[in-house]
Length: 89
Image (cartoon, rainbow, N blue to C red):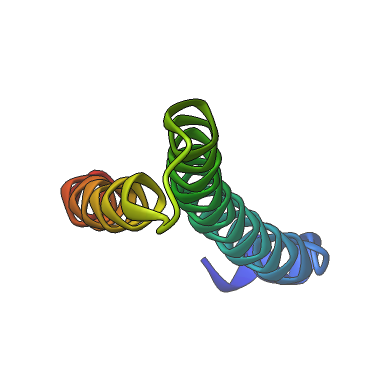
């Protein structure tokens, strides 16, 4: 085995580069996955707020009842989806 290392001194460097590339890829993949969860949460909450505002406007409510209800529902739904997606990653 010592002869193989002496004949091919680039082998350890190649292995080290592969390991670095693998770690960088794993970090990038993890970052992308959690970023997508964050955007999904923002979209869900934003849709709940927008829908509540439109319902309050349509019904002519003085108090933003639907905005509050749908906002809290969207927050709960986004937290549920976040917890549900954690074991996948």
